[in-house]
Image (cartoon, rainbow, N blue to C red; front, side, top):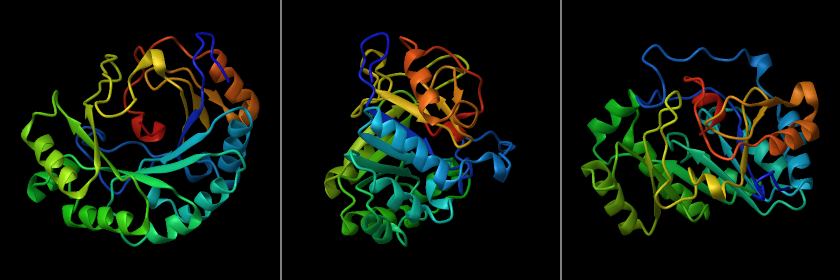
Amino acid sequence: MKDRFGRKITYLRVSVTDRCNLACRYCAPPGGIRLLPRAGILSFEEIEEVVREAVGLGVRKVRLTGGEPLVRHGIEDLVRRIAAIEGLEDLGLTTNGILLAPKAEALARAGLMRVNVSLDILDPERYAWITRGGDLARVLEGIDAAIAAGLTPVKLNCVVERSPAEPGARSVARFAAAKGLQVRFIEKMDAAAGRFSVVRGGAGGDCPRCDRLRLTADGRIRPCLFSDLAFHVRELGAREALLRAVREKPRAGGTCAPGRMQRIGG
């Protein structure tokens, strides 16, 4: 698939839930978010259908996101379903790592290829403050389990205020170097103001080279993270929603309604 600006669309990010077991201060508002009703979240069968259509149209890379994807019951089954789709070349998952250690081996057996783990700082108290209660030790155990299970290359997603030179980011960089991991530094975004930047160490935020679509937990294909444009697979069917999202994909990100990131998956 190519959009009207000649960009080849080969990447689909799939949010499998809007639920999360953390409430990071840069992601969740103090009062939390209004969660979707269970019936509003796509079933595994619906997700599989969308991914199958997307791969048939040229998508080669899929990443499972949330919320936190590992809180979705039976996530290993969804991984197995998607991994079996002929033509898919890359299947990854982004997680906060809290639930990763006991699930890493089963995810790898199901067909998951690699993981990205969110890690903003190596100080346990500061980590608990940022995440509103997260346990850093469990994240580090999850990273080790992912390495042992062969979910490599393990990449770390580190959110920064402005620069990787910040103390927390430097601690993550040192940890990654010691473990042989890759780090992606992501500046804090403001959806309402349209403030975002190119991810250092990754491809996100680079509008002229954007190759992705997003499937939200409630079934909307979004052609751009920083746009409210969306096409519902339950209303249009998976194939038509995908095609319309590609046709209408904007040249660059702008602004969008705040408070939806947890359903979109970043």
